[in-house]
Length: 305
Image (cartoon, rainbow, N blue to C red; front, side, top):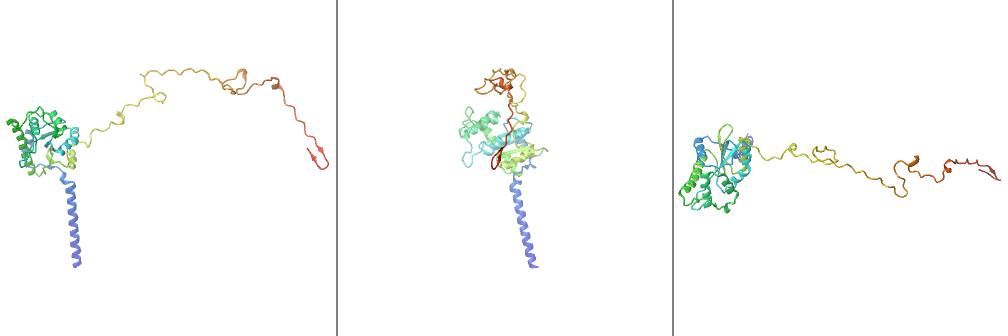
C-alpha cells in the first residue's frame, strides 16, 4: 500500500510539471503576443486618439494608430514592413509621435526632434515626416523649422505630446496592456477596440489577421500578363501583320562540276548521268564471242581438263 501511494504521488508530481511546462510554452510562444481587448475606459482612449495630431499617407477608411517616438527601431521596422500590407486591406495607418521627457535630468530628445514634433502636431505634414524618417537622427537639423525651445506656443505643443503618451499608457496599463513601442490600437471586424505593445514582430500577424491584411504585397505578375515573346523569321511562329515583308530568296547560278566529276541534272542526248560516253561508237554494237569448251587430254597416269 505504501509503495502504491509513493508511485501515485510521483505520477501526480510529473503530471503537474508537464502541465506547468505546457502552460509556460503556450504563454511564452503564443499567448503573450496576442492583442488585448480593451474592456475599460474605451471612450476616453478613443477620445485621446481622436484629439491627437497624427500624420498619415492615406490608405483607407479604417484607422490604425501607431504611437511611438522617433528613435524607436521597432516602430520604424513595423512601419516599413507592415504599412503597405495594411493599406492593401483598406486600413489607414495613423502615426502619432511624441517627444520623450527628460529622465533624471538627462534629455532623451534633441532640440531638432522637439522642433519637428511641434511642427508635425501643428501641420500634420506627411512629406515632412517622410523626410525626417528617411534621414538618420544624428544628421537631422530641422532646417527651416521654427525651434520649439524658447517658444511658449511650440513648447506647449511638445508638452502636449508627452501628456498624451502619459495618459494613454496609464489607461492601457490599467486594461492589461504591456507597454512597449510601438503601441498599436485598432478596432477589429466586430468593432472591439484592441491594443498591442508590438515591439516583438511575433505579435504582428495577429493584427493582420484581425484586419484581413495580406502577408506580403508586390507579387510578381502572372504569366498571362507578361509581354509576348518576340517572333523570329523561320521559327514557325506567325509573323506580325504590321511587320515589313521579308525579301525574296535570290536566284543563285549553277555550281560548275569539279574535275573528274559528272555534272548534276539531266545529261544531254539522253545519256545516263554519271556514265562517261564511249569514244568508239562501234564498240557499243559489238557482242562478246562465246568461249570454247575445254578439250580432254590424256596422259600416261591421269586425265586433265
